[in-house]
Structures are given as structure tokens and as C-alpha cells.
Image (cartoon, rainbow, N blue to C red; front, side, top):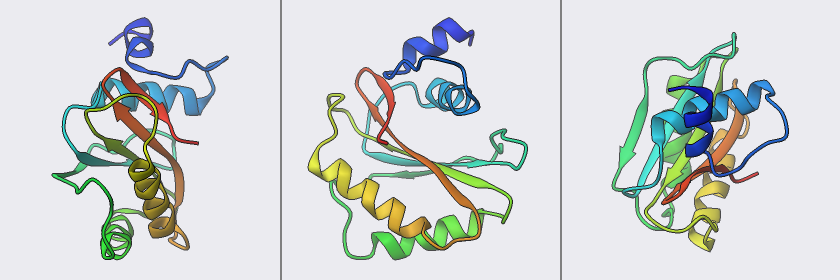
Length: 135
């Protein structure tokens, strides 16, 4: 997918092409837009490239339950090496504006990654129109 097509799938247009912009473009090209409730877990290698082993959790609930943080922590901790980073994408078939449930998932992901050997590079939201960073 060329840069122009990739950016068309991305909902947030940056002002430049930083490594994070390029990484977001690559992830957005893979996810494209929100179709079903799903959580994507991307592992970013020490060189900044995406690892080939992609993790998807289908059928996530609208809002994370009490065990979500522990389950995510276990999954991310198992996948992540010390010199790697993780990017999570919350996918759902709705508009671009994050809902309170989306923010609850964001917070659960941040809490799950806290203290793990790698870094949380970002939490993205896949919606009907594309993929955007949740900040």
C-alpha cells in the first residue's frame, strides 16, 4: 500500500513523517477501519519494525471487565521482550469520537502495560472511518 493510500486509512493526519507516524501508517494499513469489537496487539521490535506475529482478541466486551487488566498484562508480558514496545488497537464499528467505554479500554491497556519490561508505544482506535491515536 503506498503512502497516500495508507494515509487515507488513517484518521489523524500528522504534520510530518516521524517514526511514530510511519508506524501508525503501517498499523492503519493492516487494521484499515473498525468492523467488529476486537483488540489488536502489535509488537514493535528494537529496530522500530513490527514483528510478524500479530495477536488479535476477537469479541471483546464493550467495556473491560474486572479481569481485563490482569489478562492483558499476562498476554503482553508473555509477548514482549525487554527491548520491544507494544501498540494496542481497540477496534469497534462506531464513529471516530472515543466513547467512555473506549477510554475504559485505553485505561485498562495502560494499566496492564505499566511496569512491564517493554514500553507501551500507543493505544489506537479503529473506527468506521479509519484508525486514530487515542493520545
